[in-house]
Length: 526
Image (cartoon, rainbow, N blue to C red):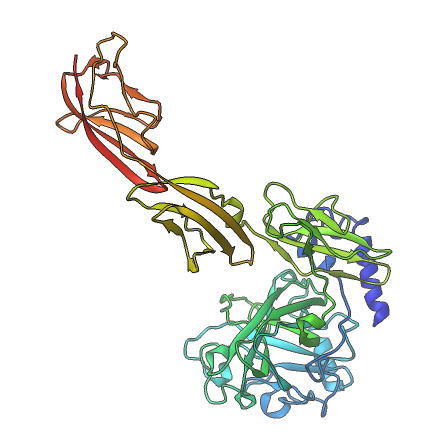
């Protein structure tokens, strides 16, 4: 098997430099025209070895006897430590395949031959789900099927786990052109604390047979796979909500579209989806040899971090953003761009013996990056001052309290710690003084052209961050408006002199970070 995996690595590396119909894995283009670019394409996948297992018989090699009928009644527990998770009275509940068994091998190679060699050994399992057609499905019409194992020791709440596996969808006897080879499929893992919960649905299926439709079962995680007729390696990272003693693996709970076809054989791809699975490993995530990207920035919450992975001898590096190659990013470090940095970053590390893809590192817009509080500000007498605004995902700790915003009522020196949900934080020290903020507006003006008091405007002493300044006559007609703090009324309306009399002014804006409206009267004298 090691030689086979080395060949895969070599093909991955060669794909970066040769071929026009084959996907090139580091140029940001869809070279083979299948709609998948770079790491989105299974052609660009690294295959890595995994050591250790919480599962027994993770490659299905150990078996009790050869299968005879593929039905739940006859063959539900042929593979040691595994059994079909849900009961169905029809044939082909799930398929267990062992090429050492003549009947099994002959049926599989005739109908849906997998890619050879298998990921590990001479046995594998097939997973099936029907299109969900009826709301009152009985046990014999169950739409989704699962394989299950009661664990030797429970999965413990709070510990990160990873399920690693190889899976593939292959050309069937009914789909010789394999026109659906890029169609994705989902591998999901469910859990229950009670091993006696298997099999579920022996009397009647609930909905489409998904485990979480039955009491005690919870979805732990899932992964979408594209295989293009090849074995693809996948993994699911998850945590359990409470101790889990039995797992079920198969499709997720989504409902497949009801696609009809004209084929006489109803076992075609168009009627239900089948995928094969092999070489399963379940371990605490810390026990996997995935390399994790780290930030080298002194401020780990800064926007312009330098990302890095360990430096290895005789190894090459290629960085990706959202699975598409970043051209020229070929060292063990990568400087995030100043603009449009948000996304998921991976790096492929390759050497002559192997290659692997790092876990994704997410860069998201951080509200703390835009947060800036003044070092020195003023509070009006008998008023309040909003020092720190409400921001999504940010909480403030100050004066022993934790709040979503900071509003002060008196002067002083305040230490404010702002924390985001991603663990980043900033600390601000703000000195707040008190001042007299009474509004003094002129009560009259004389627009007669003598150069003295000809304009009515907001004096600089009025403390407001103005948004609009409007003036109305006694009947409520607007005669002047501006959003310019320096704007002024010259006593005219539509090019004509306004009559003498009393007018109303309205100033809208923010004062001490609060929406404010100032109203008053001004007399026009000619």
